[in-house]
Length: 379
Image (cartoon, rainbow, N blue to C red; front, side, top):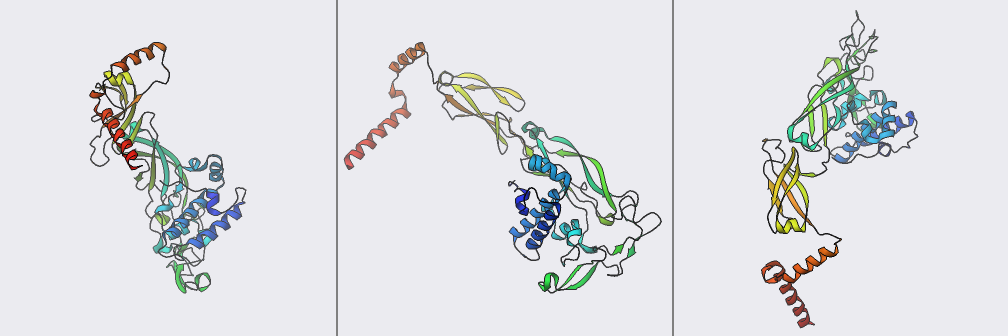
């Protein structure tokens, strides 16, 4: 996943900015990068959604406090909308108090068919990638008001058709944004696109039909998942307006680094340091795996960089479930300090070396002699 920009940088405001300044800056950014003004421009669409995410956090006192203290990690729990999967009308409807009657699509009866998606971030270990994992999330979300069943009207009353749009939820307006777009069909400013009005609002939700509730969701993370992938939990987002379907909960998975193992697709790589005597004489050595330890046998004359394979000790494929292997990469370490006796033994060994039985060394020095001779001839 790409690294997120600082929310204050996105809205081009100082960290000491007042709430009204934050709102004005977001409104300016949203209108500047709105898809209607920048058709077929992916960068503008990205900036439009980026600004919405920044405003949702900085425009909320508690979320802003957590963000100021812990950065993006502080608000990586559920309860933050997943704007990347929303259309412009959905985003405008969330912040309808800012954009009411601005001449852009605000949802209307036809514009919004489901609740908003939410986003959470989960961290798992590499060992849990091998087996799959389960996480429990506790968070607050906008849910259907259980007192009015989402109608927004107090008990004994009901919603009435909006006199401005006749219950349709949309009106025709001329010259949105100073005539830039000509005549447009927009959300009715009288009912904010709902088509109906609440005369006697519900006391619990104050006529919105929704209010915040605490909820608990269990998320099943499949084995073989990769860092940055998303687990979607259908129907665990926010409730839609007028009892329409719920949005989804998007859980972004982060895989924590392992102290010894590095992932390469479905294979694991372990760098194994060995002494030059172990490499030369051969040895049996224990190496870490996801399930504990395993023994590998170094053959005599093992070279640095050589790979040893532990079959079936890797990770399962997310699609097929077939497990990869663990590759043990040998790293031969040369001692930096030697005792007097060790130096004597190595010198004795050096006197017994026969380069005729070292084809790689012999080939290198023969090529070196030819290379130097060739340079001398060309001089």
